Image 1 (spheres, one colour):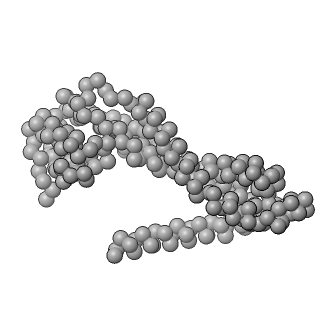
Image 2 (cartoon, rainbow, N blue to C red):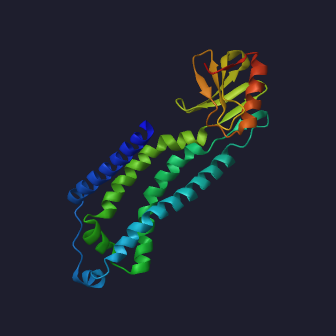
Image 3 (cartoon, rainbow, N blue to C red):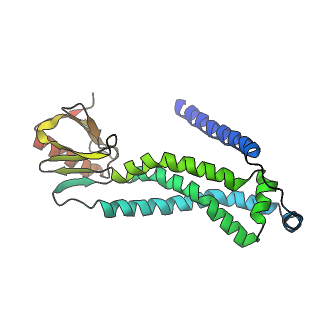
Length: 244
């Protein structure tokens, strides 16, 4: 029940933010009034604006999928499995956020080009002034700059995050320092098992310097998680303690 309420509040918050932004954009970026020729050409075709709005969400999802696959390919090419790695993970889930931001940023230009090509020159001017009520491209430029700035840490973390377990220890990418840290086996403090052997299972490593990593988001299946945990336990001599 609590989760459903949280989801409902989250959706309500997003809707409120969008509504507030649209109201602000109409004052901050007033649309230029279209000339008589544009009004005459598209005045009786207001349903075209509906189809532009309807196509926006599928366009974002398609672009998101394209960017996500491209970023995964780039990450795989940049960070192939090291020769000495016994277990290696380059998770891709974190790349969804920058892919989604890139999709939103580029969707406006794609929609404008497609709509102008399909409906004719002057349509976007009509769409902005009559349907949206503000200069969509100026407002979109502001949104794009904000999203691109927000995207930077997600992009770096998504591309650089990786874990390599070797015979000498663990090489782990630290999100906070944007660098890869090597931990030798004598630097491990404890190991904790969380449902190993199940699809959602993972394990937690704690180091002597107080830092910890968990394998919950790593690109390993249940068998690999269990095998990697056993390998680390064997090398460190530390028992895999169940979650307490």
